[in-house]
Length: 403
Ligand SMILES: Nc1nc2c(c(=O)[nH]1)N[C@H]1C(S)=C(S)[C@@H](COP(=O)(O)O)O[C@H]1N2
Ligand SMILES: [Mo]
Image (tube, rainbow, N blue to C red; front, side, top):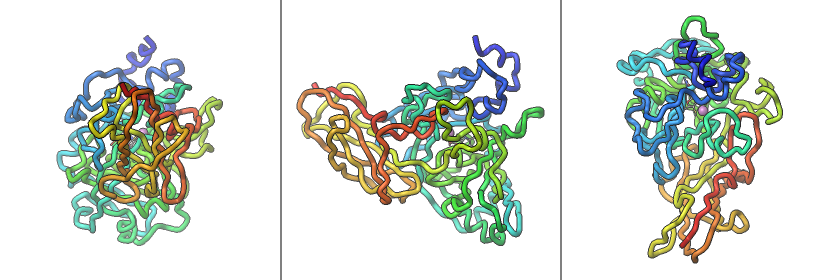
């Protein structure tokens, strides 16, 4: 019903699928909330058809999350189980047909340069494992029901990227010019004629993030598929997903933040009471410490001969995980869990596990991570208008019954 005005405008309908875009067209008024989650879709869209359908929740053609627990407790998330989020309709698949021909411009350095992926591949490569998490992951747990996709825990995964360290590129191009405070990546979506250029996906992060950032062409050892930003993606470890710009066509060091809507009027921690997201509110950049349990899930838990093995994942943005504590009584008391599996570096998540024996009864299982700097996962979500950065251990707790 509320969809009608959009149906009359095929351009908007096909191009714009996210909250950022909705804000760019701030005149949409009452259609915004229906629009913000994209066109309803039950099956995987063609560009993400390779996903493991049984593991995914298809919110819309451009918002697809991993079901809680579906990806198990592996160190890395397989590409066919990794969530997908596009703010605009992705570019044509033609761009990944000849990935080595893709060109990226480097600007804001002493010797600005255009480089093909082929040329990048001839440079020193680096691998980085990192959590890719949408800023809105956990939005579905906000009782305030902010508009936008109601993600649970599955707009997140941990993947390994291979590419050229941005600091090497900066070195090769003569260094960053003085006064450049930000690193700005521009996505390769082609905006149809007449669409405001502010709708482009262009994100700025503090320039210091270049020390960890990579221009990547591989994800988990395979060429990056279109769905995840191939042929080339800027990845900014420790920062929320929106900062890792897909199909990156320009990497610029800039004096100011991008004037794009996705930078200025979206992805900011605006207090809930405000009417609109304001460019002065803090941008969603580094991820706060967060963990959640993947087994058991809420419901009746079956105990094995050795009791119950509580398992989950924990990460802390740019900082390594120090410890994870697990509660079985909704946070009244805590026990230290063991960190399991390989340590893939400070930007990756760690698996944690705790074997427990539980008499029949009801339990509320929660996990709480502490990073090496002493930052502790928050008990309660930080309320904000758009429902970003929900890291609350309370919201992520699972109620189980042991029969
Ligand atoms: N070019 C481009 N980059 C983008 C986006 C986009 O729409 N276009 N979406 C961002 C957002 S909001 C997220 S959460 C991640 C999602 O990455 P994924 O689809 O590979 O999981 O990509 C980010 N990079
Ligand atoms: Mo996102």
